[in-house]
Image (cartoon, rainbow, N blue to C red; front, side, top):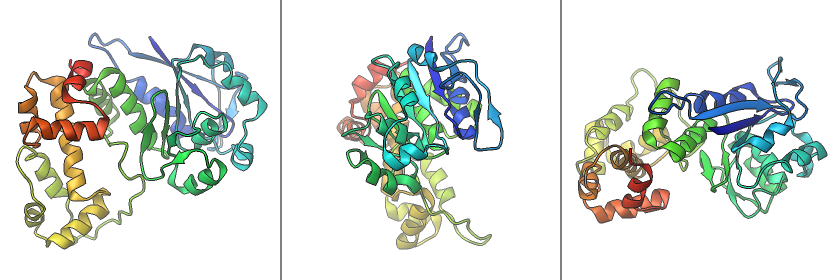
Length: 318
C-alpha cells in the first residue's frame, strides 16, 4: 500500500495538516479497500504546538520518513529561520537526509519554503501562498515562482498555493495515481469540487453580488450542459442577458478566467472523463466535448496535460 507520511513541524496549521488524511484516506479501490496509508510524524515523535492554541500528538518520529512513498509537509507559522535566511535548521536537514530516493515530496502553502531551503526547487517552477510570493522570490531567486496558480506538478516534487489549494493538489495526486473515477469519488465523499485545474488563478477578487445583481453562474451551468455545441461569446452573453463587454468583465471577476479559457478547461475535463470511463472513439470524445475534431482535442489535451488522448486513455482507462 502506498504510504503517505505527513510531517508536522512546530507551529503547524491544523487545517492543512488534516488535508492529506482526509483526501488520501478517502480513496478506495473497487473492493472498498483503502488505496493509501496515511500517518503523521514529528521530528522527535513528541507533540508539537499548532497555531490554533492546542498541541498535536503523533505516533511516529522522523524515522517514518524512511518509509514514505509520498511525503507531505503542511505549513507552519514557526518557519522564521527558514524565511529569514533561506536555510534549513540542522534537525530538519538531518530529517531530509533520511528520505529515500524517488519519494514524492509535496508542500502545502508556505511549506514551499522548506522545500526551497532543502534545494529541491532549484531551477524548478513552484508556487506558494500569493501573499508570500514576493518574499519567497527574494529569498530564493533560483526558484521559478508562479504566484498565479493553485499548484505546480514537477513530477516528484509538487507545491501548492495556500490553504484549500492543498485539497486540489492532493486530489490531483489521487487522479494521477488512480484516475478521475477514484478522485471524483473522493471529492464527493469530501464534498469538494472534483477538479480545479492547477493553472487556475489562486487569488480572485470576487465581491458578493447584491440581491439584484446579475451573475454569470446560470450561464456557466447552462454551458456545461451544452459543451458538445459551439458556444460563442455572443451566445453566452445573450443567455446571461448582458452585453458582451459586461458579460466578459463579470465572468472574469467571478471565475478568474476569460469565457474562452473557462470553456476550454471544462471541455478538457469532460474529454478526460470520457477517455477514462467510456469506450467512445477519440473522434466521438472530441465531438462530445465540443472540440469538433480529434486533431483539435489532441492539441488542447497536449497543451493542458502534455499527452495525447490515446496515451491518456492507455494510462487511465478503467
